[in-house]
Length: 263
Ligand code: HEM
Image 1 (cartoon, rainbow, N blue to C red):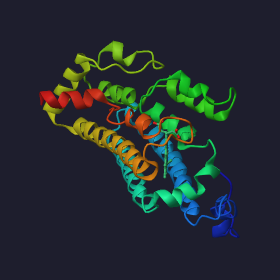
Image 2 (image 1 turned 90 degrees about the horizontal axis):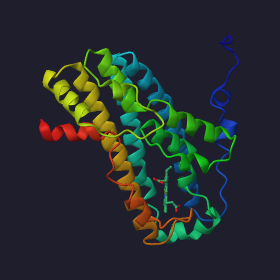
Image 3 (image 1 turned 90 degrees about the vertical axis):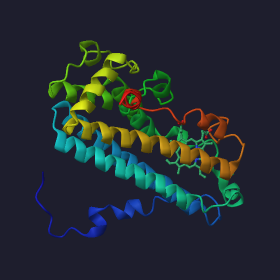
Image 4 (image 1 turned 45 degrees about the vertical axis):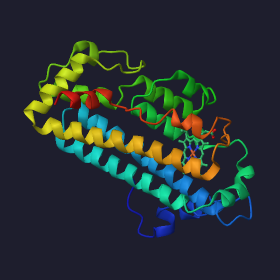
């Protein structure tokens, strides 16, 4: 760490010269600035979410409840803000969007590497996703890294292990580059955790909250897409809202949902 610089200004500290000149509209449409600003804010939140989830995983791995809960709580609150932001974008009518949409060409949120990394941290395992990014690029390396490391749920199982629960070895030592498969043994274990009603339940509930909000984001995004472009195809070439609907309602932590039927 360097020494504090007494001459540092607000503009320098926040790099505002770069940040505030990064909104380059490509049309004369009034609403294009909002579209750019919101996407940039999302990317900044994605960056913060990845930072925060990294911390959450480190705290979980060592069994630290207080700090795990704090990080998971912050993560969920950021996601809440991200979901609520869609209200602002929904003030744009279909015609206003259509006015600058051709300027987006084939670009789309579908290409967001940070979003794909986030999905991987939450457990998605799909090599084809990483392969969409140029070989040797930093984006691809980050996604591959996240798809081969323990996902958030793996860190949570490690947390339970640290707290003395008998987590199946097959779950603790699984291949992290494979998708997690729900298991009755793990659901039974979660049943025991909930019966004790101790601090580990706090962690469970924070994970469920996070899972719920991520699913809510997907639902709100597809509804916004429907109201803005109806049944048109997406700029990335997908079937648009039809494709997006296939991604809705899929939990990241299915075991934590399954156990609720037994409680
Ligand atoms: C008027 C606003 C928006 C429209 C019409 C829209 C439309 C779409 C469409 C049609 C897709 C499917 C892929 C494609 O063919 O392009 C998509 C994917 C996606 N969009 Fe948006 N979007 C909007 C706003 C946003 C915002 C603000 C974000 C925030 C980052 C975002 C993030 C994403 C992501 C991450 C995906 C990939 C989802 C997945 O594959 O599961 N979109 N969007």
